[in-house]
Length: 442
Image 1: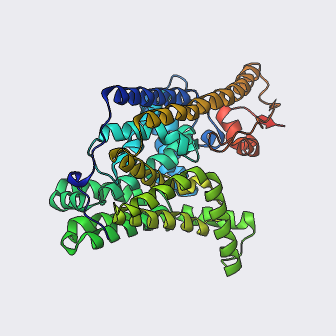
Image 2 (image 1 turned 45 degrees about the vertical axis):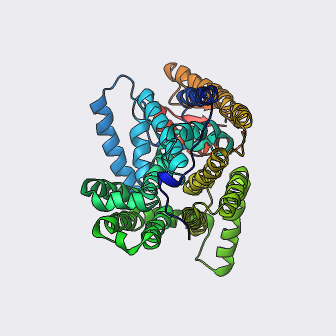
Image 3 (image 1 turned 135 degrees about the vertical axis):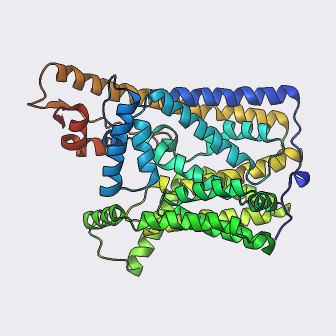
């Protein structure tokens, strides 16, 4: 289906020193903007349910509360690993969450840049990936909204890392020969299985097919064990009482009696519509890349397995009671990796002039800068409301209730998901508990 991927048969990316440093400066600017944007991003929607105000309380006090809240959440509502990560990071000082979120962003760029075309020229590839990721990424909520970053982006990286370690003959050989690496992947795979109800199945299929297509010599205990470990984590998640409770809650809320053919078809078209409408630029870039690489007869096995995995991820959302675009985050990452592979192949073949690459990356700065301005505007509105609550709280109006307005301003989904509908709907519960004061949203 295609030649084995090794660094020796991957074309080099050769740029002048001036162009390379210019790209580095663009990527560095993008990372700085990311850090600033995440730092100013306020608590939003479900964030208020997963943390509390800590004031001057120390690390151990926070950890003890996190453990208690995590046990309560995993047993009563959501057992996903990401939910517990959200509780942890939202309860830590923002500087630590910002640092880890930035590291997660950089890891996403690295995995996307090197998973198909290999590690040769990886610094330059990661640099270009960072420069372009905002332009193609469908929903930045997973970058800057605390609950989505910890609950979706970070767990997705576990799955993407597992796929990375099964991507070709070289990676499978290392996995088969290193007991320590295999043991680490077993742990990562188990945690990945605990992370989502849909995506782990697609990743397990990818891992199994990768072994089969790369050759029977790679079938061993050390390559199969991570797949079994991920399956175990996934079974524990989908069979958890809290998962059954949450599924039944949404079925009752939406009036669902069962899965009929008509219902499944309606859900399928809803999922496909939501995915295509939010990820159209990414889909277009991945499609062009696929056509180009298949014509060039490059990475065909990798592309086929990744496309199949992305398709499984998107289709599997059909089984859910509702559609959140971010449920397809793994498909987003795979399509972005495919888009980058086509771009790097073009660059290595000299089909994209340096000035065109530089110009594209400069124009792509529009997207992180727009994201920063969007979150700054949203933060001003949210922070003003919180200042009003705290001011009235100190004035002793808690018993009667503090009335606040909804932050109803809507932003393009690509940049920000305003969850104030959730805020208003949970004002008498989670919001009031967070402020230790009755909050009324009008």
